[in-house]
Image (cartoon, rainbow, N blue to C red; front, top):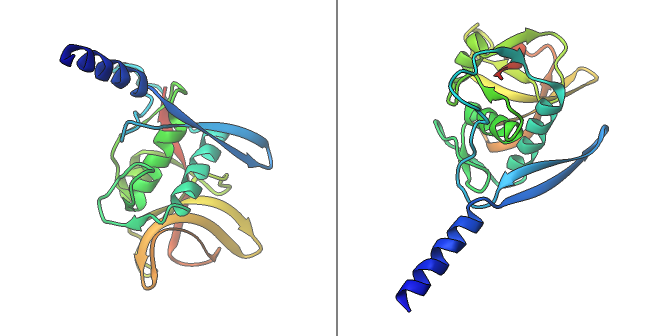
Length: 201
């Protein structure tokens, strides 16, 4: 009896460890699907071996997919925690952790991977992004204190609307804590630069 129970448990583990949830999103380009692991608490970075040294700019569909995952975080009562990089079913994440996890989800099964699996906002700015003045949905916004050139924060770009720039980020400032959709003036001195994520393939 115990042997049968063990075999049944092992079979369940094998079956369910590979399960995914398909999440359908709809935007101006139509409906597309993203695949989220239903059982593993971690998402692989999509790397296909250690010799993947070619670097490219993130394709627009992947950036848009990353933005859709950011919307899921914003809708999940996620709270800010410095250094946290939790997957979607958890509730604590910081600004760079949000960007990393959204891109990890978006990169799953694409053949691309992040330049590094763990990065600070300043590292992304210096080593893992290409600067741009025309960001696409899902690209990066690098921020810092108004009176400093230092990069201390990163957000995921949504859109320009009038003189406002809309984005999703994880922060803890005043009454705002966790992941939310926010906006600043396009001329806000806290906005330092826009960037396109670099990827390995």
